[in-house]
Amino acid sequence: MIRLSVNVDKVATLRQSRGGDEPDPVAAAVMCENAGADGITVHLRGDRRHIQERDVRLLREVVHTELNLEMAATEEMLRFALEVRPDQCTLVPERTEELTTEDGLDVLAVREELPGYIRRLKEAGIRVSIFSRLDPEQIEAAAEVGADRVELFTGPYAHARPGEEQEREFGRLLEAAELAGKLGLGLNAGHDLNLRNLPRVATLPGLLEVSIGHALISYAVFVGLERAVKEYLRALGR
Ligand code: PXP
Image 1 (spheres, helix red, strand yellow):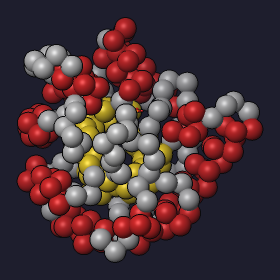
Image 2 (tube, helix red, strand yellow):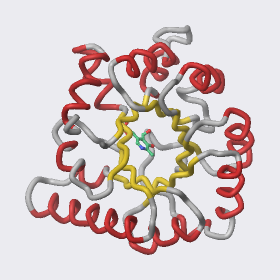
Image 3 (cartoon, helix red, strand yellow):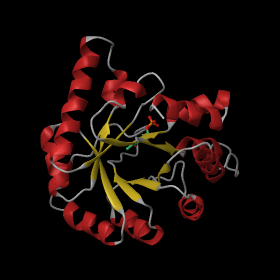
């Protein structure tokens, strides 16, 4: 069974655009869980552009499935995660100028610092996933630094032109998934997934979880969260 973790950042983006308290990402999370979602994801960014610390604390109280906190591997975020204790932390690169996360983390560049960082999260009972680039050396480095899982960056596949380019990008995902399996890493996937590209991504061997935000929340604007979540579950073969 592939778990669906719904990223509710975009609900907070809408709220922040008016500075009030609507729409509430915590209420969205409850609706997603009631519709069958297996988890809730939020990204607490350094610039706090959408999700706020208070949201994560409230979500920790309210979410009954799994709370996945995406975060940059900084000391500030480590302290916060150790206090709030999400079920999973996904380590991501972060740039203030970016509209959204643009690539997986360059694990090779931080291979000295990450083992201690990851150990502290794991000692607190938090599962650690690394939002990973697809190169074999990056996946191997994720295993070496002690991650439990890697989240494969599905953006390039999602944006590839149908035909040769798409096949090449899917081949890269497949090889990365197989390597993760051989190394004993659990497998997540995410970014730019939608109802069209999800069924094929769901065939990746060993896939445990997908994290989906933008397309699902955009669709929910028209059909409602409950129906959107149910259709995404169906696209996962559920
Ligand atoms: N996974 C990671 C690591 C992300 O940073 C994001 C975007 O916040 C997602 C998944 C979800 O991507 P999307 O909003 O395109 O579904």
